[in-house]
Image (cartoon, rainbow, N blue to C red):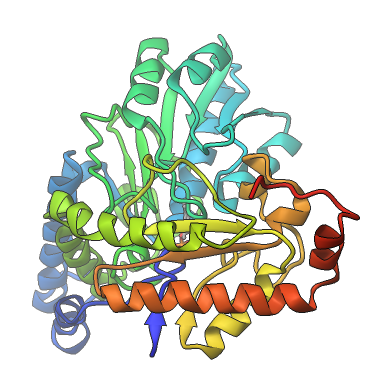
Length: 397
Ligand SMILES: *Cc1c(COP(=O)(O)O)cnc(C)c1O
């Protein structure tokens, strides 16, 4: 059996998406900035794509900036807000400890420039409250940046309420919605969002293309300098085929969120229930307040890396955390942020399923994880110490 259960790392493009891209490679290959017919056809397609993206997010077309992906959108949103704040003497930025590295590393860079970064606690359940944000906002707060859904554990934040607090206090609010779009309803107007980042390859679109939504009136700072593309805010010839694929994928992924949730949640919960049968294991993050497809567990006495390799042998593609940190021996910053001790954070498994998955495949995953965890524990010195009582268990059972 071959099961792809790492949709939070990236997704498979649908045939519809691939077909939507082909004409822009084969026929309409002109540069959207060129004045002749094939260029102008490309220009029209680009502006239509912008309108379609705006319709999905509930904003104006001129508030959509096409980028090279989620990382670039996060960088540009945060740097822009920091520059705007600094002009008014505001150098305090609020975020959380479990953001994506595209956010955290940008904040680190700003900290070195003299910004004060405050990372809010996300508690054991992996959720920050609007009240925490309200209490943290100061006179000199330039930006609040909080992710919509977490990429490792899948928990969803109360974005609408946080947005409301930011509006009330007149502080810019950015959200990394890369793991939320297509999984929960996202509406920049209703959710009181000033800036939002998206990445196509997380919702069955192509890699290397994304969106930064920035509410009109927000002056963006360029990350890429050059030509006057994207209203002068993002230079570089537009990736039109990628943009066409992304917008098609965006429409497909958002057209029936309720149906998607109704189909996927029972399968996700079956997976959770099955994995909970493994002794000394625990689900990471809130049980209900999570995207429909993502499940993350910690197992005592094993290394996540070995677990992933053995699952691969059984045909299952999964992750031990975010793809960006795997390969390094650092425990996941997300799991540490929700209070998992390092020795337990090392034994984590993220399964992120898509609608393609079948019930038999869920059962196959459960049985495979059970087998592999038992196998690894039998060879693990740290598990032996737990069994012998030399070390104390972290989990109750
Ligand atoms: C994948 C991801 C990103 C980065 O997006 P890219 O398009 O790969 O640069 C940013 N934030 C979150 C939450 C992600 O999951």
